Length: 185
Image 1 (spheres, rainbow, N blue to C red):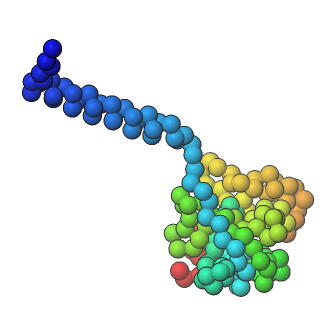
Image 2 (image 1 turned 30 degrees about the horizontal axis):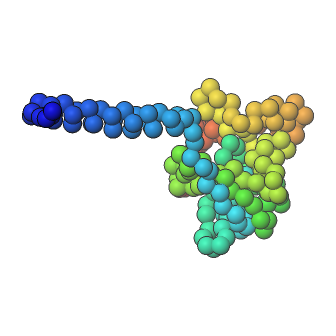
């Protein structure tokens, strides 16, 4: 018995192969969870300078590169705003000269001003959480999201800690809307 394949038979075989390859690719892509997140960017370094209550300079090791870091999840008073100097002083006392870990989300690792957006950890402590708990910053809210430290902010407000001891303390976002930033960027 002899098998002969005509032009139409070969075209059908090619379609079947292409379909099988496409199905295999779709299956492979579908087998990766859409919720899977890329690994965070992690840096180790030393805080060399504190700009204000939510921005620091960190010299990372081993590269010795200095990164300007915006602490993710908090919003501290502007330098020219009431509470700005005390917020900066508190962060300076807490982290300047200290070895820290920076954890950034690779999907949104920099803000509009080119600063690395990162969680800042000092010996395992979340510095953003500490700043809000002590009343030196607000939980960074956006639209209807109250931010990651809303519970800490509520407790600091109830305990009248730090800037929350001032009954007319103004959220930095509102201050910037009315006056702009204290710093030219």
